[in-house]
Length: 402
Ligand SMILES: NC(=O)c1ccc[n+]([C@@H]2O[C@H](COP(=O)([O-])OP(=O)(O)OC[C@H]3O[C@@H](n4cnc5c(N)ncnc54)[C@H](O)[C@@H]3O)[C@@H](O)[C@H]2O)c1
Image (cartoon, rainbow, N blue to C red; front, side, top):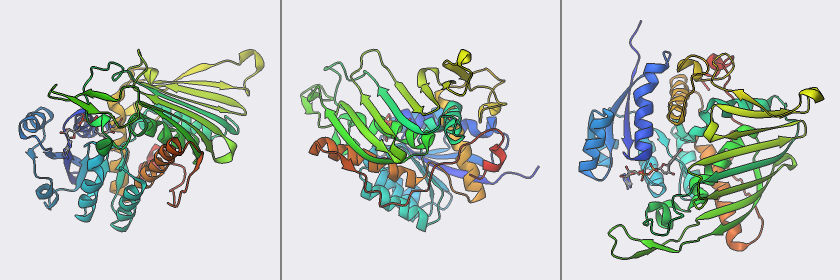
């Protein structure tokens, strides 16, 4: 068998997402036999040398560096992957694109619609294959949910209901961090958590947002600083709720908070159509709940579809035998696998930077609405790439070059 082409990756950041992505680079070629590249974990980049060196060693990166510009200038780097907090995304992605690199970036793509659009336009001009790590799309159940919607099994979509609930800031003694400072993260629970719900809504239903009405609340307005010497102002939302009107007359309600005791990472979405409903809860990520009025009346009821069977669901066949569940980290590897195929085939990948713009437009419009206390209509000047294709086992090969 001929050797696979080598793809050298530079990863920026080593913490939560740095570990999730490192794991994906580590596993993709091992589990997906038809991975089109030999992916090399070439350089890990961050600001703090000591912690960086330890993380690079743990995760098997060949080298580590605190000099992003020097890494970008290297001819032997093909891909730059960005896992810094949001205020780092735009400048790093722009430099990488200008240097001709393919770019993967964590969500939200940028701090503003203007920045996100500039990146999407640059990616298009430079003909680079780019992606935003909305990894929840790559849970097999999310693909199945999108397939059910696209097959028309829900009929006309009327409601979307999204919840993303955490509780880690409920305790007022928890210290300030980048997620509580607007200049670093742009917004609080909204950009962090609602961004996922917005992307999942677009992916599962194929519908765009038309207008939004938001409500933001900050429950704890200052928190201890890292050195414990003082207090830092919290200038982002602790909780953010918004209503939405979607294409085709559907309505949506979305809620993100870091103040829901008992909810560590509740990520829930429900879609109701004229013929049926589906609901998905990340705590039971391998299961999709489905109800259909098309079933005979005596059989009507919610039933669970186990999405860890390779005969009917994408990705899982590359992991374990049917029914042997996959977890959070697998979604990142699944996404990477699709992205590598798109790159090899020179085909578009989704979620791309245009999807990043679309999410950012909804995030920003809801923030504007919370401020003005008015409904805000989406401007949507960006040309979207249309509803994302849905991967199924039957179309896996065809979609390999998504
Ligand atoms: N896709 C998902 O499911 C998901 C989940 C969590 C976080 N995220 C996103 O990932 C990004 C990072 O979040 P996290 O939870 O990994 O944060 P984190 O605090 O755990 O890690 C941030 C990393 O960025 C590094 N860093 C910070 N500023 C930097 C700079 N200027 N230059 C270089 N490195 C810098 C830090 O050293 C650290 O390695 C955010 O955009 C967040 O929204 C996505």
